[in-house]
Length: 271
Image 1 (tube, rainbow, N blue to C red):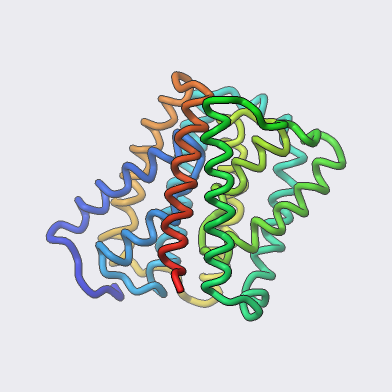
Image 2 (cartoon, rainbow, N blue to C red):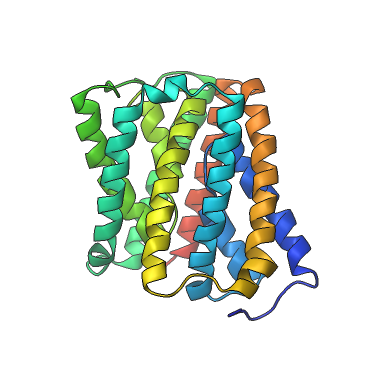
């Protein structure tokens, strides 16, 4: 299973650790890959080469489960108004993910991490402020127009590059983009982000399949499926809480998650 050590009861531990990450997916719309990857490496002893594709498989399970429960508990009509933006961000994201490996050759890993951490921190602080004092010029572009589509392609290109380099779906950037650029509510932004993230993760898994690097059956039985089940349980709980959670609270949670992601990114890329 390409691992160093395992907890005494890896199946139970995988189930339990999947729940909080799934809760984020159901409540906010994040796949949680950046938080799950350290768990796979540090707690389950997987080497990065095995952890990354397994993380993507679990992310796909989490995202699909979260989208299903949010579709049942929330109206998807407002998300349809974001369709042009969703299409543009999806196209740009896929192209960006394709270009990412070549761009990485020209970037210092530490410098990239520092810039990314700063950007995550800035967005997180903006959303934290917005949770208490609404000041952002939300809705800069019409998500239903041509300009919304073209802007989505350009923004998706950048998000796709960053997400591919971090080996995550990119929800940390997609949700603030929908909120700030297109004026979407945090709940609708999370649902739209799930749709795009599912496309991005599937594309990533196709690449790994061609490289014959998909997780083997023991990895899926011992970690993948239990953690995926825990993620779905968490996503169900999070999705059920969304209708009862106010917009400021969702922005507060998202802001805290982004700040935590920034600190983690800075720590991982410290020079």
